[in-house]
Image (cartoon, rainbow, N blue to C red):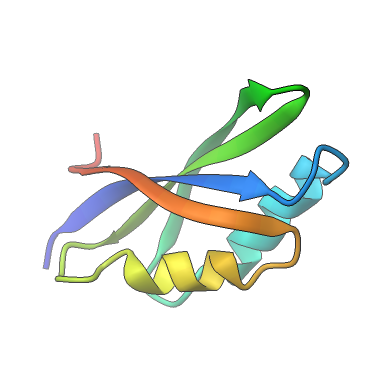
Length: 89
């Protein structure tokens, strides 16, 4: 089985959300078989920032689905969207 790097955009519920704590909670919520790669913050509008996180998962069909569900269940997450999937560098 190969691996793919999934870039996932996580939107917090509000501007007041502590992004550092949210990032730590997202990493802790990663399901078995998924591995944290890297992250950055991306300004959206009016002080709101998204977390852009790269997660390494297996290249099976539906490989990011368990990660998306785990991230969506984390307190402080408004939405989760996979923006890119490709081979890890």
